[in-house]
Image (cartoon, rainbow, N blue to C red):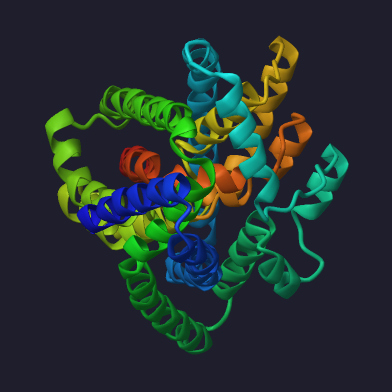
Length: 407
């Protein structure tokens, strides 16, 4: 899968550059076809997120009849998710501004990127106040929250629903759980079909971008790719010793347990697609109790993206650099906190962080339309971020498993 995706990226880039340089009518006409194809692929991915997350959480929680156990586990998971995500945000806030200072830019590149961003069809969303954010955590209409893609309120409702199921008599609960087990299995198949089209989707997005920007933008975008990948490597290197210390598991054992999920994550760029491999690694290789893994891992892939704060910050700071927008210490701190909060709403799909980043772009005065530009070149960085995310999911699960077994 990863080779086909990379091939789609390279072919799209080369043909796009040819179209930009030659202005051949046939290639320019292909741009008008490629743009909606790329949009259709992104929409297909998004259509699978809600049912897969909801069904996985309900199955993982409602299978346990011990609500006190689930409650304790949920609180511990939330604490570890926040600690890990905060570390990611701080690392990115410290490193990204220093590395972006070396980004080479010229007037022609900045102008072409601004022109491209102006044509992108990415809408901004109003930035909620603290009061509005708190009120919005509990949806007045769960169906509307699902329709709007409001992941965090929907997850909270799903958790409450699943916990309520644990108080229902066994016969009724089992019928509901079996239904959502079927939904979860079917959605995994559907995700596989959509991800099989990843080379086409990446080709369409990259071709349209390159045809509009040409070679003048390649240097800046390549710098973004290298920066994002390098930061992912740093985050991965932090995870292994942290897990060894907190979960009391050897580096080799943890590496072997994480490797299958990392391979799936690298190829699919989807945390959700890695869930079966994560469950296998946690239960078989690390010996995490099934009740712990079945609850923690679906919750983690749905709400916890260790690289999310770093990805959001790099995207905002990089785009700000292109637009000559400088961020002082206070603005950087605000962006860091917002990236930390928004990271818990990132869906576990390719480029998921870009799908919820509009509020922080708008709050920092960065053109929201630039998200379309980043989305087209985010394939390679996302191949490295997703293994980091699933490794962090497994790390937290291993820590929770140790805490549970030592009680």
